[in-house]
Length: 106
Image (cartoon, rainbow, N blue to C red):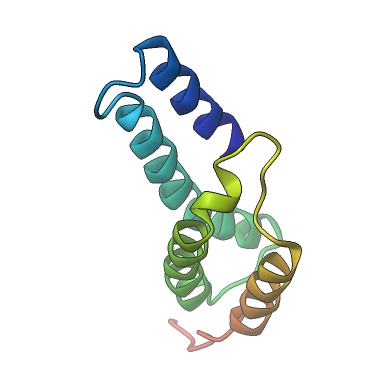
C-alpha cells in the first residue's frame, strides 16, 4: 500500500497538485488492497488445507477495509505503515475466526 500511495503522491506532484490529481492512483491502491486481502486469506487457508474459511474471508476482508481505511493517513506518507498494535489485533481476530465456519457440507 505504501508503494501505491507513493505512486499517487508522485502523480499529484507531476500534475502540479491540481484538484483530484493522484485520485485514480489512490483509489486503485485502496481497491486493490481491499480486493487482495480476502483473496490472500482464502489462498492461505487453502494452502494449509483448512476448511470452513467463509467467515474468515468475509469478516477478515471487511475488517481489513476498515483498518486500512482508518489508518490511511498513517500509511500515506513516506515510510508509513499501519501501527503494529492494529496489525496484531487484525491477526488475532483472523486467528479467532479461522475455522469458525466448521459446518460440514457432505
